[in-house]
Length: 125
Ligand code: HEM
Image (cartoon, rainbow, N blue to C red; front, side):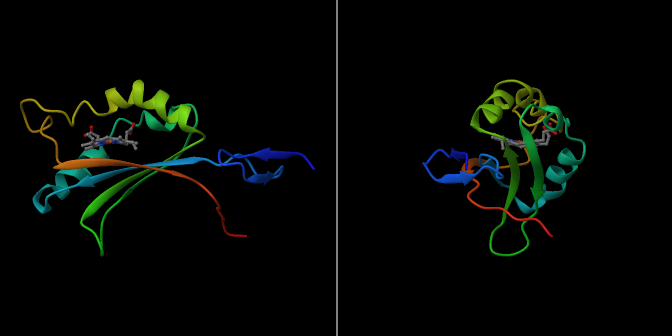
């Protein structure tokens, strides 16, 4: 059987693909900025969908256990994520930097980037 080895040396069956990476941007959003943040995402740039190696995006609104929004993204590999960060990501975030006017004021008070490797996954049969 042909085996592909993942980054930490774990063998993967040839029917499985090399594991993806998950990058989550954790946003601290004051209560009075939640609506502003969600509206910004509602009119987001949509650059990410056509980026090479992009696999999934979700904006997760906190309900219980945390008050932080998660911007969940999944990528083929780290290089694909870095390429997006160095290019289209900048244009997609032009509305969030400092500057004058409502559009320029960031809705989030802070952000942290979390990185994960997908170890296992499942979808409905
Ligand atoms: C300073 C840190 C960041 C802040 C405050 C922030 C906030 C935002 C906001 C408010 C939007 C909506 C569009 C806009 O108004 O510009 C957005 C878009 C987005 N953000 Fe961030 N973001 C940050 C960094 C990141 C990072 C590191 C990632 C990587 C996971 C990420 C992933 C995304 C994605 C995928 C979109 C949608 C872009 C598209 O549609 O093409 N963000 N972000």
